[in-house]
Length: 329
Length: 250
Image (cartoon, rainbow over all chains, first blue to last red; front, side):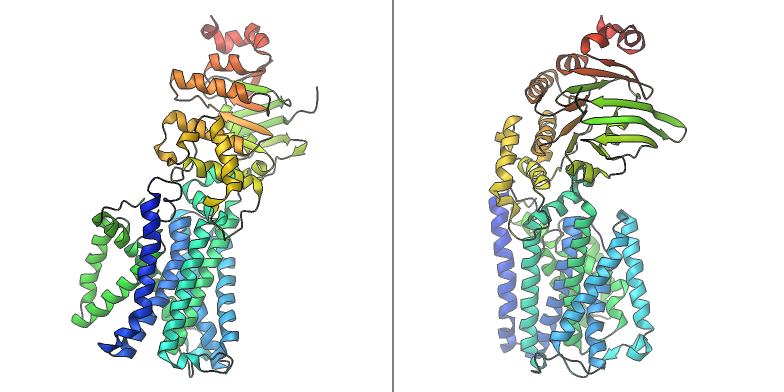
């Protein structure tokens, strides 16, 4: 429950402090990471850090609907893909201005979320999981068959987006800090939403949807809006990903990607928002280091994830809270 | 008689081959506490679910506050002023008692699409919520997570939620179910205080409570109203005595 539980509960003071300290620490580390260039090759660090933050944006957005709305979307990679393809396709037509590509990326993701959410949210539980998966597979296969834009092979972007003609993203450090700002914006937006009147309805519907209806709330409307916000934020992640990789590919929206996002949220600690950032960072760092040590890294990674899910209820955030004796929800 | 708050006209509902509500008509007058009694399986909870909109009737009309609500979903009926409690306590277990009630205040206030501002800090929501908790005697427990409240406290919390909705009609589905003698006494006292403030439909098995509180009683058997009238009339009705009350009235 993380953010949700402390409000008005007895655990409030301790958790409230954790609610400020942990994100503060996370953003402090991220802001200072480029300084570590003194000990490691800078571009490598910046690339890895940017990648982590981009996936953290998507994971935080996913946690908003999964952790606070109990809407387990197995298709969130589609929104990342749509954001990325908006950048790629515009670039293929010579449009590299982010004042055009960013709104397009966001609009594509939000509209797709509204259209598919309107249908998906009429189902519950495992049906919701399956239908969100089905919609994302639709986008995946559509992108794979887009021959003019690379089809299966993907699409190389000749030049990164510019701001009013200035090639800002050419500098890895600028891209890094833009991603950091986007992550911070996403995190604080989601945190405000969760604590707001709107968020309270969303959390209430997770606890007892029938009760919410008999209070007079049209739960569906709130869930659809949350789903659209979440989709839009993933579109933002897609926009950044296309720029960071100079490349877009249908692989961005594969179901494996959607699954990885869920794992990131679970690994970090569901329903805390900052847990999603920790989860994304842990997942990508483990992947990075294990895959360098051995070709069979997945054989080690799989059991590790199982252990975290089995014994680390509440993910890494929950584990940390138990170790420090700070009971969390 | 003045325009009734709630009118059911020839309502019918069956589940498969089982007719649960059979051509039922019923009026609830302004200000009255209308009790509905009947043996298990008489269709009392189905009736409440139809009035609150969780179940659609197969036939018939439901008119609430002068408006045909037969086709309206539960949330729209709640927004129109129909509050209810549940036989099996239905609260938000992970929310504090205060938050449970504040959410009802928020439902009434409308502006729930706000995504900024901490709802937990809003006096506009918390003050009416605290007042409602105070009325049911839960003010000292306002910050306790609802899941940790005792059974009787949860029942009282449901009442506070209903109060905070400032309802035009309150449906109470067995509010005394599972409570001890002492708690039942407290709840009866509480309902007596609330009587007259808004009309109530009370479904209850505890006959002492029903006869102590009701202005009118309708007896439901096999989905039909067998008799309807003041407690004295119902008590004196030989049909009722034969069919249901029998030894309980001795």
